[in-house]
Amino acid sequence: MELKNKSVWQSISPEQYKEIFEYSDRYKNFLDKSKTEREATKFIIEEAEKRGYVSLEEALKRDIKSGDKIYLNNHNKSCVLFVIGKEELENGMNIVGSHIDCPRLDLKQRPLYEDSDLALFKTHYYGGVKKYQWPTIPLALHGVIITQDGEKKEIAIGEKADDPVFFINDLLPHLSQNQNTKKLSEGIEGEQLNVVVGHSTYGSDEKENPIKKLVLEHLNREFGMVEEDFIVSELEIVPASPARDVGFDRSLVAAHGHDDRVCSYANLEAIFEVENPNKTVVALFADKEEIGSVGNTGMHARFFENAVAELINKMGDYNDLKLRRALANSKVLSADVTAAIDPAFKEVMDEKNASKLGYGITMSKYTGSRGKGGSNDANAEFLHEIRKVFNENGIIWQTGELGKVDQGGGGTIAYILAESGAQVVDMGTGMLSMHAPIELVSKADAYMTYKAYEVFMKNI
Image (cartoon, rainbow, N blue to C red; front, side):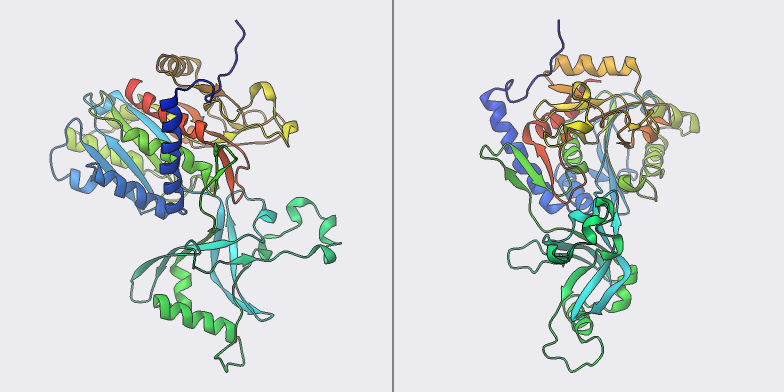
C-alpha cells in the first residue's frame, strides 16, 4: 500500500474543528503575553500555580508523592514542570523539551545616542535573523529595568493601541543604487539596526544632545531610570504586532515567536492534562536555544539535572547512579519547529521528505546540516514506539527534514537531551517564514502538536 500523508482538515469531526479554533485562541493569548523568555516563564508558572503546581523549593519542605505537581523557576528565564509518577524516578521519565527564546534584537549595554536630530537605540541581533526583515515595521520594547536602588521593573511599550511604537529606517529606493548591488545578507548590516526612539527638542535649551537628554528625562520620570541602568537591564526589541488570524477561513496564525512557542504552548497544555501518571512526566521550557543552548538558562546548563537530583534525594537515598539511570531511562520528544514547504521556494526542499502545512505534527528523525552534522538521529526502535502510540491514539503526523541535503540545515536541543543516554526524537510543528519577525503556522498543526504531546506523556 502506498504511503500517503493525511490532512488534518480532511480527517476531523465538527467537534474537533471547533476545538482547533478554541485552542488557537488560547495560543494567541499566550503569544501576545509572552514576547520574551521572561514573559513566557511568568505566564507558564502563573498558569501552573492555578492548577496546583508548587515550586521545587516548597515541595522539598514536605514529603513528595505520586501525583504531586512541581515547577522549577530557573532565573525567571527557563522553567520545568513535573508531574510525579507512581514508578521510581530511576525508571525514567517521559519528557517533552521545548524552548521559549526567539530571534529578536537586544539593546546593547550602552544603546542610547543622538544623531541628525533623532534619538536612537543601538542593538545586537539575537539568533539567526535576516537583518533586512527588521527595518520599516512597527516595533515594541520589552524587558526588565533594574534601577540604582535595585528595584526591578518590567516594561512592555508598543503593544497597546495608544502606545508609541519604535522604528528602524531603511534606505529609499531612489538612493539605493549601491545597496542594491550587495548580497541580500549584506544589504542591511548589524550596526544599521538602530531603533528610532525620539525626535522632538521641544522644551529643551540644551545645546548638546538635547533629544537624548529628553529621552532620558522621560525614562527617569516613567521608570526611575538613569542612563547607567541600561548597563544592567535586559531590553529586547520585538515586532509590535499581536498574533492575527490569516486567510478568509482564519485557518492560520501570523505572529512573532512561533519558533518555538507553538511547541512550548502545546507542551504546557499537554502536561496540564496529565494526572497520576505511571512514570514522572516533565515539560521543559528552555532558554538560549537560538544561540546554542548556552548560559545558565540554556539546556547545556544542569538546572534540569539538578532538579531531578533534588527530587531523588527527597524521595529516597540519593546517589549518582540513580540520577544517571533516571536520565538514561527517559524517553524524550524534542519539541521544536521545522520548515514546511513554501510554494514560493520549493527549490530548497525535497518534497518527498518535507513537512506540509495542515498534515499534523512532524517527526524529524535527524536535524543537523548536510551530512547530518550535529544531529541526534533517533533510533529505529524508539521511532516505532512513537509511531505505534500515535497511530493507536488518532494522532495525525508526518515526517520531514529541514531542506535538501546540501541546502543547509539547523539544530535543536535533541542532541543535548540525548547525551545522558535518553531516547530522543525531534517532534514539532511545520511552519513558514521561520525566524522572520512575523512567522506563519497552521492552526491544525498547532492543535495536533498539543494532542501528540499529550498522548506521548500519557502512553509511552
